[in-house]
Length: 188
Image (cartoon, rainbow, N blue to C red; front, side):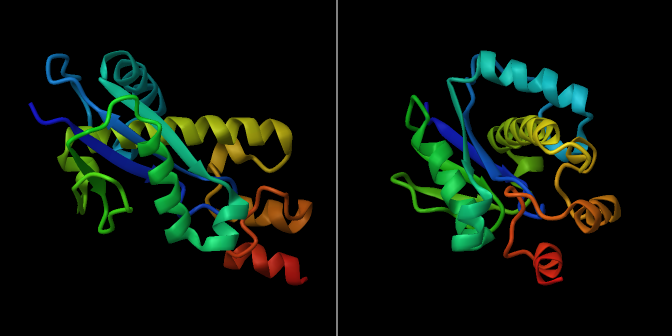
């Protein structure tokens, strides 16, 4: 039996907080119904599936790259770092790795990048769900640390509400200072 690890990330388009990635090796003897791209699920369904994934997978892990690392390296490199960190924490090493998207981070196993893998590959779908739940939980924490920014609502994406909050409340230590909308307010 070949063990496949699926890896996916969440938060690349955000202007605050870390980019987060998850790696998952599913147990073929314990299939999980309903796996798909995390963006196609309700928050409640994602949470339920995340609990099932954690309980039934052979191995799973979440990695992250902080806003400061994103500013230092750029979002693509920080995403690769988050993926490598998730992979490195797996208790079991896979035989093969499948990553959502068109780029494969440097790993010690063979693998491939699969465009729309979060829709097509169960392991990547599971990783997508764990990464999204972890980042949403992080945004709930940031919402408490930085009241008034409504991070729990917009999840760090540059929505009109978030941009208005940036204008009135200013840039936090968790904002990605290399990203255009944040840079704009730093220059004012």
